[in-house]
Every structure is written in C-alpha cells, then in structure tokens.
Image (cartoon, rainbow, N blue to C red; front, side):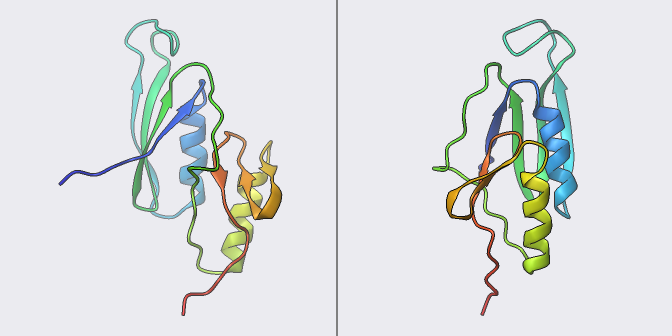
Length: 124
C-alpha cells in the first residue's frame, strides 16, 4: 500500500530540526540519517542530506536542499493534544528560541513551519 510523507526543506538544519521535533511528542524517533556522498548543492561530502523521522506515528523527511524557502500557512502541522497543559507545553517549546507567535493563534517554530491554534477543544 502506498503512503505519503511530508518532506520539509532546510538549509543545513535538517538533523537539528528533526531532533527538536522528535523530542516534543511521544512515539517519535529518528529513523535514518543519510549523508552527502560527495560535494554538491546541498553541502560538502559527509554533511547530512536527508533525515527520515517519525512524529507520533507519522513519517516525515527533512531535506537539506540548499537555499531556504519560506513555509506557507497553506500547508501547516496541526497537533491533536490531550488537554490544555499539552497545548501550552508544545506552544512554549515551538515558539521558543526564535519561533514567532502570529495572528489568530498561529505560530512558526524557529525552523519556519507553521502550526495553527493554541486553544484546546475536548472531543465529545
């Protein structure tokens, strides 16, 4: 069966970002780290090129693709939280160290991807 996994584009921070994300959510881990076999547009030989990781059961790929592109809220990452305490913990972690709180309850973490909402709505 085919599966789809988001690919996040970075300019040298792929491994750092993946380690940050997996530190936030249970059931998360780094799967593989692939390094450049030779010098190229994404960096020197031996530098990290691709990091495959799992966040709360969802696979992702982080790519050091070269020049950084800005992320858009048209594609964002919503995290389902168990309670307001978890929302607050994740909000604080994602907005720290260069993250930006934006209008209407959105934020961008220090690596750029947008995350919607700070409110918790219990499931009925």
